[in-house]
Length: 395
Ligand SMILES: Nc1ncnc2c1ncn2[C@@H]1O[C@H](COP(=O)(O)OP(=O)(O)OP(=O)(O)O)[C@@H](O)[C@H]1O
Ligand SMILES: NCC(=O)N[C@@H]1O[C@H](COP(=O)([O-])[O-])[C@@H](O)[C@H]1O
Ligand SMILES: [Mg+2]
Image 1: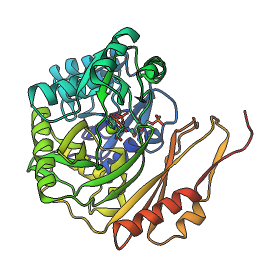
Image 2: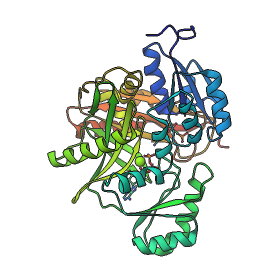
Image 3: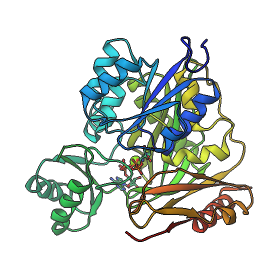
Image 4: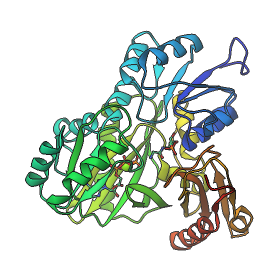
């Protein structure tokens, strides 16, 4: 039960991170009459444009975070990115604030080491072989031990930033530099993972709510340079793969606990399903659910957070998503081609409204339904290719 936004009885949700995923979370919360507060490191972030109010702070600064949250007194603190001062979230949870799904989940998934050690060493889930390195020398040693090819990633980063594949031992120095330049936060530590030769990879959206755990139909995706470019739902899997995927997702989400939606990233290999990583929040590849499911991943997240039951998820149609990425850096641009994209059958577009482009920055997504996944993928890719970042004045 709650009152209208801005009233004394309002239910308040504060998002830490205000990108394209948070924007949809805010919209879903607003649909249920929840008051929303969007926070990020830069002004006019996508979710800020639709929230009731917003703040621009350094979310890696624990004191700034605590000060804001104590002032706002939100009922729910909803992390939307990894790079947050999660020590502060643990403290706030101790004080009685509700961190979604839990402060420990945010802490463990904030860097790759916490969640990888939990999954592989405590929960005994299958993962790629891995080592950590704090210097170029340690990295070279790790590359020797794991062999090439291997994948190198900063501990704190997302959407492939700072990630590279080390194909021969001599690549290590270059990989080290890429990792340092792409890391969010101050850490210089990296994870080195043996390269998994997967047949395909999926995101298994898993919802923990007051009524238990439910899984969305599997989402297949393609990543380029560590960032997703296409996703589709459903992805065809054998019943044995589905069983293994659900077991992994249930094991890791039960361990993390709390209410909300999780994106469990899995590799499907000839030797079985391998755990990659998990987001305790909606997933970029899951944007396809805005066109495929009765409740999107964002609606499910909000519903679970608020303590409502989620007893089933219905796939209404096969569908696909494809992204528009910028190829230049500018703040003077327009997004074109929307009219062409929307002329395609069963197609929608989401333009995120990010105020600046950067090389490789995701700016919009095309969503298409189809009679089957192949048709939907074809249309979504066609639509995304019609979308363009048009630079007004080259800077
Ligand atoms: N060990 C590996 N072997 C083979 N491919 C890998 C490996 N690790 C990552 N990849 C590829 O790179 C992609 C991105 O990796 P990962 O999910 O770890 O990065 P990320 O920066 O956390 O991305 P996001 O934030 O988008 O989930 C994976 O989806 C996969 O395609
Ligand atoms: N893979 C994680 C992911 O997609 N996260 C989404 O991207 C935003 C950051 O985008 P930006 O780097 O363009 O600001 C995040 O705020 C979140 O919405
Ligand atoms: Mg990932």
